[in-house]
Amino acid sequence: IARRLRASGRSDGGGRVLPPSPRGLPIIGNIHQLGRGHHHRKLQALARQHGDTLLLRLGGVPAVVVSSASMAEEVLKNQDHVFCGRPQQRTARGVLYDCRDVGFSPYGERWRQLRRIAAVHLLSVKRVDSLRALRDEEVASLVRRIRRAAGNRQPVNVSELIVSLTYAVVSRSAFGNKLGGMDPRDFRAMMKEVTDLLETIAVSDMFPRLRWVDWATGLDARIERTARKFDDVLERTLQEHERSDEGEACGLLDDLLSVIKEEGGQGFQLDRVDVKGLIFDLFVGGIDTISKAIEWAMALLIKNPREMARVQQEVRRVAGAQQGVVQEEQLGKMSRLQAALKEAMRLHPPVPLLIPRETIQDTKLHGYDIAAGTRVIINAWAIGRDGRSWDNAEEFLPERFLHDAAVDYSGKDFRFIPFSAGRRGCPGIAFATPLAELALASLVYHFDWELPEGQDVESFEVVESSGLSPALKSPLILVAKPLEASTLQVP
Ligand code: HEM
Image (cartoon, rainbow, N blue to C red; front, top):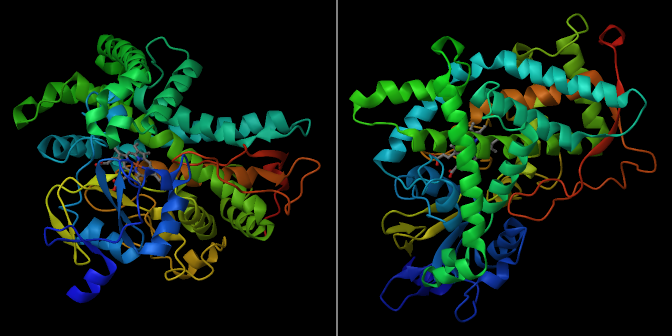
């Protein structure tokens, strides 16, 4: 084994065996091999050349890239206790209160307590169930908006409507209807600014000694501006909720405010900054991810009319014509719909490289030495398309999840990890999946869908935008043909 490792990997001169690396350039290392976007594709190509565990040098920072289900299992399960740190990236520190939220917090007792509070007060099944009426209302409003636009057979921007839906559900879940006096459109624009910023890799993340470059390029000023704006709004909203009577409590924020009062005796005092960080995670974690999952699923169904017909038939049969709406408790009987959503997330995980981790101590991975403080990138996108795990891996075949219904979102099967796994795996699954399934089911229940005039299925391209978490390259513009519930053909 040692001979094989020495042949494939490299020694660092100190007797340690390092994973194979593509040849880098002086100073910048492998940065130029990643380019500006589609890192998941470029890392997949590098893994095919150099192996499922490879070492990159991003400026002065070592990064291990993992690209197979078995290596993901090693990192996210067998050695989860070692691979559970988060790199403290410049933009996250700047806008997320020095990483005092759950998602970007370093591993440790504070993170554990915050995560417990998020699990109990924000994201538990009981909590998510209590938001059911809100989801129903917002999905009904989506359907009404499409009906209105479709009245004169005008194309509708489905992508835009889906983002509006997830935004409305997340913000009403968090704040009820009290948003610090801010116009919801301005709030959404501000959130977009924040998420764009979080996708920006600062020069100092790769060259820690070059902090001044972030200042010189204006990044520091941009971070400060955005952080101040966001904090002003959250602070105003917080004060508005604090002034409300208890009887008026109506959102997750009110729940967290009551935790501030209650938890003091249990050794962890939640404060205002923690509450803002938790609310922040709900917005950053919830809006873009759920929207992308619905949008990709819808686009892939349009591209595959036979699959669309099967899903539509199932949804219309299960929901029936009587109620005229899809009900959440019927989703469990819509296995084709659920399979289509999973298949969309296999091909297009909303966070293709998950959120970077960092090793908190020295370890060995597949026989290679990995030092503490190494950044860890898990290519969930490449793992979901790995021909060693999936037949016809590049094709949209929801049926595969019907045959293998045990493969779910929980991260037990490492071939399919859109929500990641392990102690830092996504705690928002129970929040995300009922909304994504209900929205998709309602879109295909109430409407037949066509491409706008001049486009056909062959020329319709399901292509990724650039960026670290790509959406569809062009928004999904479709013509909706409303079906009245009374005329639904229920076979
Ligand atoms: C389709 C929807 C979603 C997808 C695909 C998704 C995916 C992910 C992924 C890949 C991670 C990184 C996990 C890791 O490092 O191992 C993550 C973390 C996280 N997600 Fe989600 N997520 C979704 C929805 C949500 C929602 C709705 C929320 C909150 C309401 C949320 C809150 C979080 C938080 C707080 C973390 C950080 C966990 C930690 O570091 O302990 N996510 N998510």
